[in-house]
Length: 302
Image (cartoon, rainbow, N blue to C red):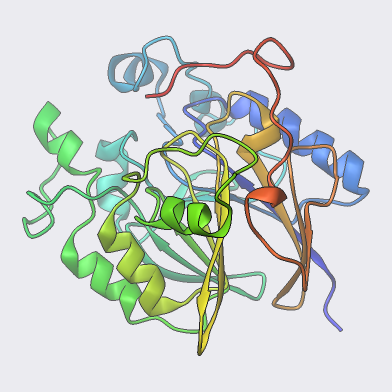
């Protein structure tokens, strides 16, 4: 029997590499084992040079920490694979559309495709939906407009992922449309306020309904969310949406695998189990909300 795997996922890092490394240390200590693989769902902001980060980052006040990893001053302790969001160093990523290493142990998966990681089939689609640009060619990001457009996925990329099957994890940046409605239908009195019904995009939703991955991991909207899509003749797809990396409780999500089967999952760094195989995955699987002022400070969205 293969060794169990501990897979950690991170919400939008927005340049906070030091912080998330500390969180992963804490998760390893609480689970009593090494994190084998780290996945990030976009808006990583892996700017190689500090001046680039200050000039181009979503918020000029965000830390320019990735430069230390790119220059070899620091090194990540566990392999980190990430997709693109809509806030990235798109100049650096343009020549790595099929993926590539940006620093030792830090790998951009690419704009769309499938990668087998430690025996898991991980599909991915970078970027968000912009209807005006989905059929337009991807241009080299040399201006403010073309850099913004680089953060949008294109039809050919969606089709590349739509052709995949037997997927363990699908990484997308923007939520699939309609999952808030599904959660409301299941729980008319939800345990926490729900986000807007219109959050997410229909293209990603069709992709999920076509590929039928076992798990989907999302970022972008800076909210934690949990829902299952299933139906007659349809296997369950469990969706976990992650907060940005302001506080660990809802921006770190982990899965323990035996072979290719997820056996348990949890949020944050405490090691507490929120879900086990055979249990329902829904809003009740989310961690208790922490009021502002507890833990690390809350930060505004982007």
